[in-house]
Image (cartoon, rainbow, N blue to C red):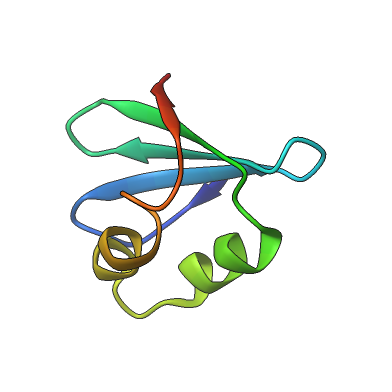
Length: 67
């Protein structure tokens, strides 16, 4: 699990085998995004603004479940 510096996102976790990205938010909600390539996870970690990257590249691009 990686703790990230963001107002909206607190932690992210990536399961490489299933390509599942878990995103934990500051409002205590969490979602599992399915079929996320590893490079997207890495770009999220490296993004200056995690929230902006998430909104543009993950939020509506992948199927998800509330976790």
